[in-house]
Length: 288
Image 1 (tube, rainbow, N blue to C red):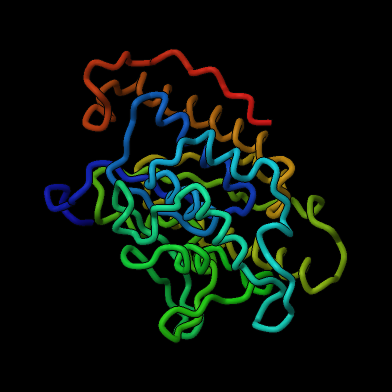
Image 2 (image 1 turned 30 degrees about the vertical axis):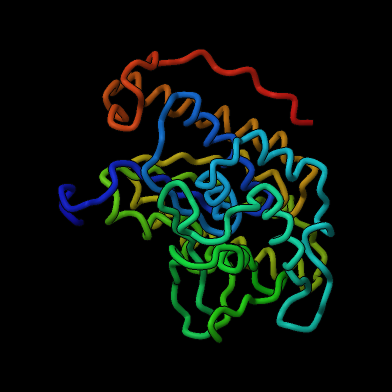
């Protein structure tokens, strides 16, 4: 490991992929905000990349939720069997831009942000951290078979979770302290349809693939926030995102408070000195 004195950031947060379960990250970041903990950098994969980018752009957590609270899956993509997947992802990019109209590149973000994707042509993990933003975010979210690969500079990219569903590998040598949040535990077989459709078999295979790489990625983190209750939620079901958000908030607030009780100085460098150690939780807005 790199000596801590050579690392440019004190605290980084790595957000896993997870589709609609990624709204747990919004709740998690709400807990960080509530306790006054501000990361110096952030990385995300797939749904985690969307939350990471909006957070780094300064979009409030409740605005992130409102953006998706009345959205259906078909509002974010368009069926198109040609192109290496079932759906185009263009509508998704336009939808995200609604809350970030002045953000076009990584350089427009408030803190260093890293997106993990998979280079389908060369079979390697890819990090995006500069240049045009939306195409790279879409690439990180393009679950194979479900969505068309995204072509950038002549190379096809798909979901970063194919090789690393938690982007801790991106931040480990950059941060003195690294927190990983995994909102994508392996769903039980009973929670998946038993239909032998291409889509269902593909999604179950994808679940198993994520299971294979998540443990090593989480082991790179100094602190691990696991959300096993997310296994009961479906990857593309947006109807439950409010419950997912609240579960992410509750689990993260509890984890951070217990950690800070054991070690009061753990995040001292990333919190205002005049902030009470455990601020009273904010009222949870009505986001239904």
